[in-house]
Structure formats: C-alpha cells, structure tokens
Length: 490
Image (tube, rainbow, N blue to C red; front, side, top):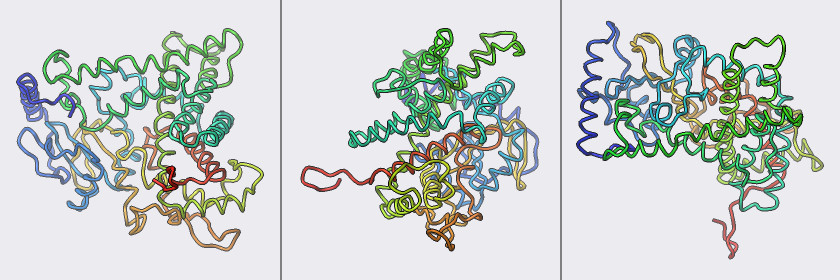
C-alpha cells in the first residue's frame, strides 16, 4: 500500500482511526438477527485487513467463493464492510433488481478528495447531480442513435489502419491513438492527426492517474480517510505528495477541448459532436436553466467522462484482442476465412455485415469474456440495511461484482472457461459457413459494462467501435509475433 510505511506518526494515526471505527461500529451498528455472509475469519479491530489481496483480488475472491460454497461473501476491513458477489444471479438480484438502494458509490478519498476527481460521472454519488449528468449522456448515446458516432468511428479507423500499414512496429501507440482520436471526434468534433497532439498526451496522463488510483487497497487513506489530514511532509505520507502531483490533471485535460468547441461555435466552425449539441440546447428559447455556468459545467464533466472512459477501456479491450490473436492463431484464421467469404476483397466490413459474421461476433464476445476490462467493475454502495439469501447486508457496505469470476464460471461457459474459444458462443447449423450464435449462452456485454442504474451509458458506442476495429483489422492484416533480424519470432 502506498504511504503505509511503518513509522510512528502513521501508526498512531492508524490506531486512532481503528479505535474510532471500532467505537462507531459497536455503538452505531444495526440490530439484526440474520448472519453475515460467509468469508475469511476476522481479527479483532483489524477484521480482514490482512486477508485483502493486494494484487489480482478477483482471483482470490473466486477462490473464496469456491471454498465457502457461496456466491456472496463478506469481508470487513477496519469497520468497513465489503460484500463480494460472484454469480450472475446475485449481481442481477441486487445490483439490477434492487438498484434503487444499490446505486451508490463508496467515497474514494484519494481520488475524489485529494486528487480532485469528484466531477467524474463514474464516481459521483447517486443523487440529483448524478442524474443530471447521466441524463445528458443517455439522451445522446442510446442504441438507436448510432448515426451520431459512426462517422467518427470510421474516420478514426481508416487513419488507424493506414498507420498500422506504415509502421506496424508501433502498433501499441497506434491503438491508443485510435481510441483517443475516436472519442475526441465524438465528444468534441476534434480531428487528431498526430500522436503528439496535446489532447492525446493529456488523455494518457489522465488515464494513468485513474488506473493507479482506482486499484483496490492501493492507498491506505481510502480505508482510513482521517489520514488525509496528515501533512505531506510527514514520514510515510508519500500518498499526499503523489496526490499533489496529480491534482488538477483531470480538469486540465477536459477543459481545453471543451473550450475549443465554445470558440468554434463563436467562429461558426464547430463540427457536430456531443458537446456542440448540448451547448446548442442551452441557447434555445425554450431551454430552461437558471445558471448557465452550472449547466456548462455539467456538459464539460459529462464530455470529460466520455473522454476518459473512451481512452482507457477501449484501448485495453483492443490490446486484449491483439493478445488473443497472437496466442490463438487458429481463431484468427477462422475469422479471416469468414470475412473473406462474406465481405470479399474489395471493401472493409461495415455494421450492416455484423449479422452475417457470426464467428467474428463470437470472437468479440470471447474477448470481452476472456480478459474483461474491469475484473471487479466499479464498486457500488448499498444505502440501507438489506438481506439476501438469509444473510444480512449492512448499510453502506461496499459491494463488489466479481465480473472476472462470473465470466469464467464453468457451469455457464463450460469446463474450458479459462481458455479463449469463440466457438463456445456458436451452434452448428446449415447455412453459409454452418454457424449461428447460440441464443442460450449468456452474452458478456451486459456483464462487462456495469449493472443497474450504474451500467455504462456508452456501452453501445464502445461495442460498436470495438466490433468495427476488430473486423477491419482481421480483414486487413495478419496479426503475428514480431520477427528479429535472424527471422526468429519473439
């Protein structure tokens, strides 16, 4: 844990925090008769603080679910309750069907208080402010509104394919640039020509911050918020110095492109995009708003969440696809054979072809399932005491959906669930190539992009972009290991 060095000031602060939590837990707890869900044995005061895995927690949670034969687990870390859900049924029952009380977010002290990320829709507490941001997002990007983002997807993709052809050794940089260029076009109507573009560099810096700060258990201050009051010069308070270096990065990243759209509106050169459409609605005579600056801030933050999410998760998904093609060349060849037969050699795949390419669709599903982008999803928080399957769930518990474990459940996906196998989604049939999607298999999209009222509102756009990128790359290139000067792959 960052900033958890064993020195007297930190130890004293932790002890005081533990005593406070223990007192609060003992005197403010709920009266209940039901048992807590099963989990590892808890120590006095510390609870399971020594059990919480610091790396790959989703694997440990899956092992515990098997050990305790339960799809719902309970852990306590210094008075903070954690509920881990390890089955689709448990996630659907609580995060979907009871979303009215399971849509909160635990407060992340490091990221929200110290780094200044509180304007992010993903982390915002459930309430009126969150609803304002979410409504703005949903009215623009729903499944039937694809015409708003498809032109940007295709333009960014053509530039990406040309970059791969010109400099294939820089595939990782090209991949990141593709996703940033796409989301900058969708959110702000901006055209990015170079990886050295300031908005591209800023996106990478923003993604690096949130990727580090969102790691469960990485910062002791998230467990003991009182530590945020420790001066940065205290021994062991390096997390404060890191937070200071990160402070303002999000605002400095999302403000320039927003202001570019406003300036382009004045000049009459603004291109169609999310930010432009939202700002134009504010100018309508029938648009009701008391404080224009507040409404503009909502637009800026919502576009910023798109900018952040599109730059991060989309890149990870494409890198997973490339890894899978390198590790499982047979799957690559089968997808290419289908593309050659259906598309031919004269054009690239388009979305109208999707239903005629079942193997490619299965390969896309398998990428989302095999190495899911968010193995634990983003934590939820339950707002009231609840009970489920005879277990008590305490108010304000942090609820973790073990997406990785759910998508590797052998009862659902077969005994080879840990392997990459697109055919698990297919059934033999009579037809062009003898395949069709199996309607009885639970597709991974609804599991990979969050749950209930916290499900990602941009998932249709994300999946659309991923399918188009994957099918176009497979139809244009062979993805093979690099070869050194002696002709040996590595």
